[in-house]
Image (tube, rainbow, N blue to C red; front, side):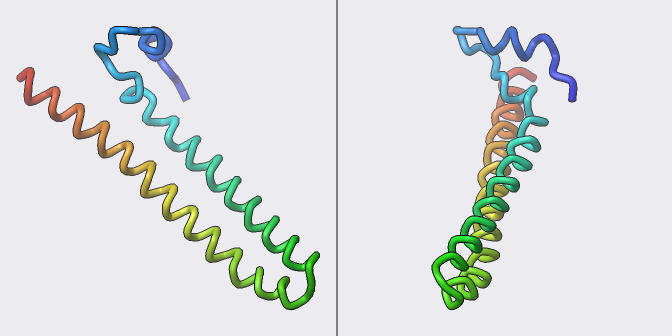
Length: 99
């Protein structure tokens, strides 16, 4: 992953004349991986705590944990795509303003 020097210059641009997130789109993939790891750990904790509290709760947690994992991943993906779409709209609007 190659972040340009402009990324760090834009980080300290207090006039907010240019957005730094446009250049950092590849960071979204990193956030997605981190979110997936978090969701997997959350599912493991749900299953472990379920079996620690009894067999019935353990079996129930085997059903609930994949649903929680899937729901979290779907919402994470939708949220990250929404960020990318918003950044894309911003760039297209700038192109329309300055042909």
